[in-house]
Amino acid sequence: MTLPVLALHQLCLAFDGQSVVSDVSFELRSGAIGALLGASGSGKSSLLRAIAGFVPPLAGHIAVDGVVVSSREYLWPAHQRGIGLMFQDHALFPHLRVADNIAFGLSAFSRSERKARVAELLKLVGLEGLGQRWPHQLSGGQQQRVALARALAPKPRLLLLDEPFASLDSELRTRLASELRELLKAQCTTALLVTHDQQEAFAMADQVGVVAAGRLQQWASPYTLYHEPANRLVADFIGEGVFISAGVVDATSLMTELGPLRCRYAHSHGSGTQLQVLLRPDDIVLDDRPGDGPRATIEARLFRGADFLYRLRLASGTLVLALVPSHNEHEIGEQIRLRLQADHVIAFPTAELASLMR
Image 1 (cartoon, helix red, strand yellow):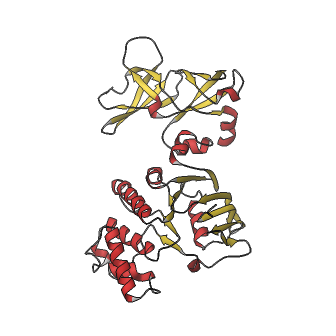
Image 2 (cartoon, helix red, strand yellow):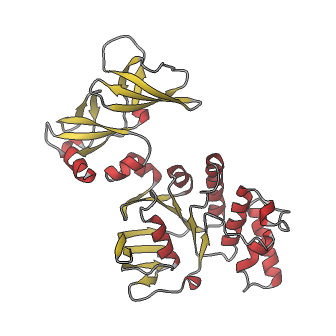
Image 3 (cartoon, rainbow, N blue to C red):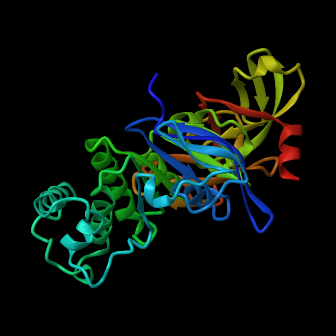
């Protein structure tokens, strides 16, 4: 079996005697793009710095192509790891033209090889003809492309990206994330991204790791993270949604304030057990048909163009969210019937949630 390009095994990191990362393990295969996703202070950037070789482990190890490069006993120098780095501020050299910025890490190449590689990368990132411009003459998006070209120039075995789109506006971030994925895939470059933006992570990565409280809560595909979160922390962090109470009826069903739900988790709990069910906005349908059924009061609405996101208060006082087509318009304060249409039911024992919230 081919060895993974990057492997972390039970990695622990500490600064000034304070633990910041505990027992983190994951692998990244050749040509794959991974992302470490988490809030500020979660430990994701510390993990990236450790992989780059700037932070020694307290325990565990990091391997690149099967070779241990970081452990408590040994720290391979950062410049010898064959790892490329792309920072959030781009870190372009203002006194060097675009072409010279890209060629900065190519000192081992001949002059003709450098020229050919720079021309190849300028074309790859869509900046042909701009090699003689200065960084300040470029837009933010163009500077980001130059930084990417410079990081890719030496053909690194692994590329690390630290919040590469943080300084860009949200629309540009989403577009460039998609473009960057295509570029990395075209180059068969293995990459690891650090970000706090889940849309950015989902747009780029094959595998995403949710980092919270210094631990890797789950390492999985974006689809699995959304539909099968490993715990409440992941469920809360990924996507939008709220938890409502539910009681186990039998091996396949639950009963909620909004009606019955089919649930493949139900068989693991005895009848009458109280669970908390995660409802995404697309799990709740506004029902305009006359008749009886659970009702809710519209407390707020957010127009998103094609959709409205409604915040609704149930009779119990519980707040839920509903995402509906924008032609289905209702006023704040209006009462409306609801029904459930949940295909992927995510539920956790109430006791487990209480312990996580302490």
